[in-house]
Image 1 (tube, rainbow, N blue to C red):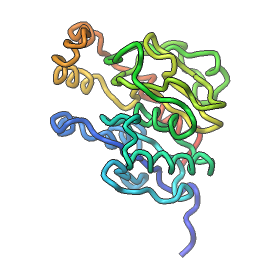
Image 2 (image 1 turned 30 degrees about the vertical axis):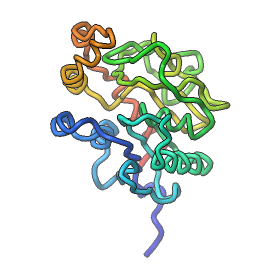
Image 3 (image 1 turned 90 degrees about the horizontal axis):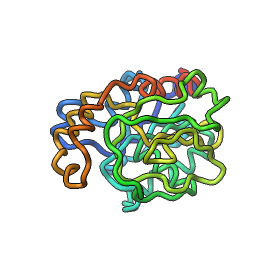
Length: 245
């Protein structure tokens, strides 16, 4: 048997958590939604549920890694999360292309020397506007991306301090670090490329009372939910640019 060529290697989805059972039954888990947004069929990926104690193979066994969102908090430093952070450090050192989303964004920052905590500006939920920063100019992943675009948000914690040597590619009104590039081929977004408007509307309906108690304008947020095709295309763009099959 011959060794697998790089083009035949799967994409790893580092699965760090799921929505509650009601939303999961309607929309699938976070790994499923990430795979769909990235255009990955079952034969092209390996999902490893690190939040359930599973462990990925060595970074060399994958052509790229995607890291999901999670209801967990990076600052809790759960053993499974710290183990995943150690794997991400090894993968970054090995040069593996990676893209983290929300919890994955924060976990990458934590793993590689940044600082994560609760967003001083408060919770960011719903469809919000992302603005590209000067560092995005010339980045091949962001080529042709408009200077502002809508994206789905769902987070309370954030990257307070990016890792040393990273570039901040985008911001929003409530978060200065919406998109980060670390080195040449590691990217992360606080926003969710994988979420569609129906998921966000259902989430707002399910947790509306909690958010209203935090003085969020839930009806206004719900009315503003809309499609986010630019953000939604970033995962496919990333794989095409940095880890083609």
